[in-house]
Length: 180
Image (cartoon, rainbow, N blue to C red; front, side):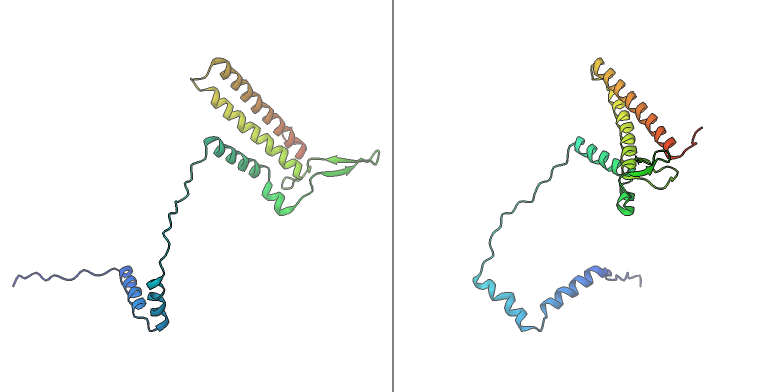
């Protein structure tokens, strides 16, 4: 009485749908389907194509770095804001004493608004600071000559200092009375 009953394995639903699709294609009631399936291939031969798949090589590290830096510049300079809102490139104000119209680069008093030149100049300062950090990283390479290390260090530190000072100046122009 101790017979083991074996059950057939359950077929998975994917194989069921695949076999159903194959059987429905073979049992088509359309006569033109059967004619077009066999007749052209009885006297026509498809050509042998010797196509090679295109080979794509990876871009160089400098290309990837340049694309990332360009993307960073576009993001921090407010490119999306400029496309959506379409602000003027540069503003103008009238001098109350002389009545002359003079150009204004920064939209003073509004934190969430900018002219196009304002965004580009502040974005350039952010990129300049980032390049300074990259130069400082390059100065730490042990395989470089000492003079190159010193040059990279001076260029990196000066880039970071210039970017910081100019960004602080931009913020003070943008928001009068800030950090005072």
